[in-house]
Image (cartoon, rainbow, N blue to C red; front, side, top):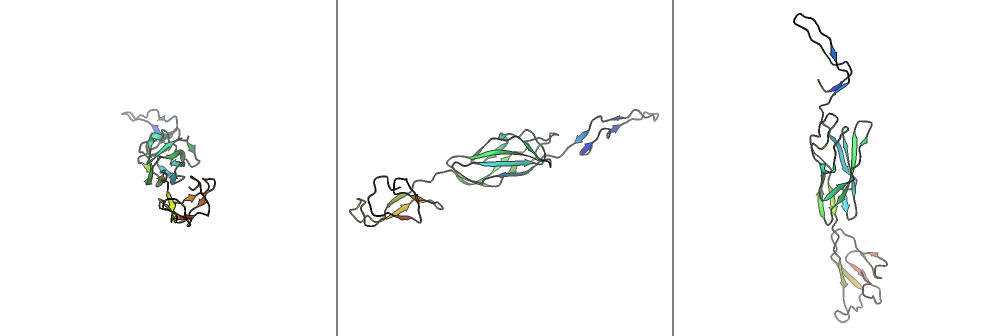
Length: 212
């Protein structure tokens, strides 16, 4: 039979004996469906493609038809873990989707990462498996906290090392490329956005730990 659906009575079989007599016709008593088409992934995407500390994203995968057997173990995720596989959502066009939570690993800086579904992971109603793998677009992972910057008076105009100066300019070093930074002069009660590699202290005395 070719691929397709066959109604009750559509498939019939009969035989003739050697004398040419025809026997009773036998027919299918129930509808028959022949499905030789493998299910495919029509889309697989990520809600957030730039993951940092404390963030997670949702992976959504959609199949061309209803499938069974999908498990978290059928996926691989670079520098991340997957969890919370949802139940299936069925759509009127016959497609079906699932979601998972993607959580980046700690202390990672990597700009090239994907989530991949393995071939043979799911089956349709006729036990046809997905023939090939499916891969998301790229996502970046940056879960490595920046190191603490350093700072010092630009000019210690008093006795060297006494931190008494007529110049309130403070030099800041150790800022990562592309990073933003802030400074506080009241022990972190308030923060101001830094610019360039310096900030200025107003005249006055600053206790230990006041400047951050």
